[in-house]
Image (cartoon, rainbow, N blue to C red; front, side, top):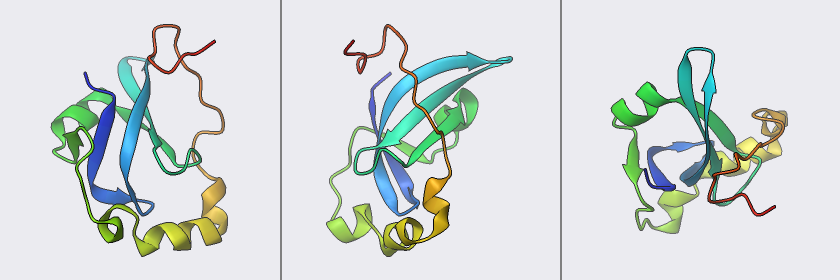
Length: 100
């Protein structure tokens, strides 16, 4: 599975994400994605929703800036909502992004 993904709809105003971790939680596999632009914007998506929702395109789709960073991002960052999300990011030993 590739590490670079483009959301078909903006998430907090951003569209380009990196898959940094895959983990098992309870009885399902979840993926942790982090925005390429802002590490504070990260999300956890279960495997079924991620792979079967048609909301994601593999790789980074070349988009005009106005489509890849929308006004929603500015609004999100200026509000208190910017403090939500995953508080810490843990990288598995086999992750491409594990540099320790």
